[in-house]
Each structure stands twice: as C-alpha cells, then as structure tokens.
Image (cartoon, rainbow, N blue to C red; front, side, top):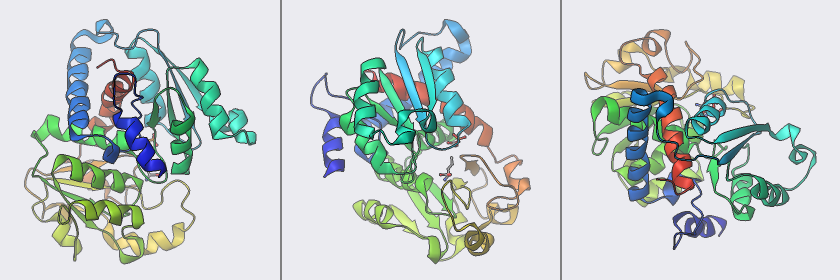
Length: 321
Ligand code: CP
Ligand code: NVA
C-alpha cells in the first residue's frame, strides 16, 4: 500500500507533485532517460567550465542523513550540491534526535521546514518510505537494505559513456542478491537489457527480487552455472559478499568463495566487456586484484559518475531539469 502511495507521489499528477527518488521501479523509463541524459550534459559542462557551469539549484539546501558509513555517497552528494550552487548539511542519524527515538515522521516534518531536499541512508527501507510519506520536500534513497538506485544510474551512465546504449546488452551480476542487485533488476525492467544473475542458492533472490523478476519474465535470468552468466556478457558486476548490517560473515565467506570474479571467468565475457563494482571492494574475495586493477575495470570512473548523476537526480527532484 505504502509503495503504491509513493508511486503516485513519485510520478505525480501535476507540476506541484513531489518528485521523490526512492526506487527505479517507481520512475518511468522516460524520467530515468531524462536523468541520465541530463547527467551526461551536466558532466560535459562541468568538465568544460568547471565552477562556471550552470547553477541549477542556486540557494537550495540538501540534508543528507546517514545511519550507516559512506564515502562515495556522502562526499558526492555534498560536492554535487555545492557544484549546483546550493549547499549541503551532512548528518549522522546518531547526532540527530532520531538516534534517541524521535520518530521519522516528526523528523520528516521538521526537516521539511528547513531544507529543500533530503537524502537518507538507512538500514530499513521502511524508514525511507516513512520519511517520504511525511516530508513535504523530495526524498532521495542514499542506500537502504533493499536498494541503491543512485549507484545503478551512475553505473548505467558509465556504460553509456564507454559503450553506448545499454538496451539489448547482456549484464552479469555475480554474487549476493543484495540491495545493489535489486536496483539492477529494476533497471533491467525499465531500460530493456538482459540481466543474468549467478548466486549461490543460499543467497539467491529474496521476495522483493522475485517479484521484480516476475514483471518481465525472461528479462532477468538466474544462471544455472556460474559460467553461463559470464558468457558473452557486455558488463560484469559484483559487490561485497558481506553488506553493511549482514551478521553471517563467516557463512557468506564460505558459500560465496566459488563466485570470485577472476580473469579466467572474465575471458568468457565479450572481448570488450567492462567490469564494475560499486565499491568498497575486497580484493581476493568477490573480485581478484587482477580484474579490479585490470584494463576492463572502470570502477573509478563509475565512482566519479556518482557525482554527476546525483547532480541530475537532485536537480530532477527540485524540478530544475
Ligand atoms: N558505493 C557506495 O555507495 O559507496 P559508499 O558506501 O562509500 O557511499
Ligand atoms: N551492498 C553494499 C553496498 C555498499 C555501497 C552494502 O549495502 O553494504
């Protein structure tokens, strides 16, 4: 029910509707395409003119709230908002009254009186939905236990820059069916690429992912063998075996050990295949150092694009693009 209500809010029915950025399946392919195109334009302009680039969000204030650690998301939102001519307040949930039990609903209503847009990184996706429900300013998903849509738009932007349109391409997700993977399933449904998932049965798709996979049967496939996911793939992706909040690290290390992305497995992919990882990466676990540091790896371009795509996301939520 809450997700349906948010779909209405996210898509809106007029110029005054709030544009939340909660999940890629709540946006239209047109909006996703618009954000990606704008990100490429914003980046090109920024690289050419640097600090003389257009100030799309002049005078606006972003608050980012973190319940979990972050390097890329924290810094790229802050710097991105400054580049747009606005300012950013970075907050740890522990430093807010939220950390002492003030409700999300009250936090949302108070913060909405001070700032123009908010980003939340939280352990429970429901907290993000509650924030969006009670806020009167747009809310952006900065990673939850369910999804990480900002990351996936940066990844797709990076693919487009290097290889062109992602439509019809084969992507391989190797390892944990986690928050990053779910956002890729949403993106596959919206942007028409094929996604092969190779995961151990113990950590296969959860109910949210199975639901998303059922929307376009055949668009996202579970690979019977690890090698099937790699064969002919244009983009190979993985993530840490132990996400923030996972408490079964020992079991995960054991079960995931055959799923390391190695040069031998990458050799099965298309000759010009790219390798991406949202970072932080653990060399010698989910990916070999050779692949991560090798010529097919674009992980630092991917990290850089968090900055540019998030500028477009902020500007989109504020109806500035
Ligand atoms: N990829 C990503 O979201 O990184 P951080 O956890 O450092 O923000
Ligand atoms: N799946 C990882 C992503 C980190 C950016 C986590 O949630 O910890």
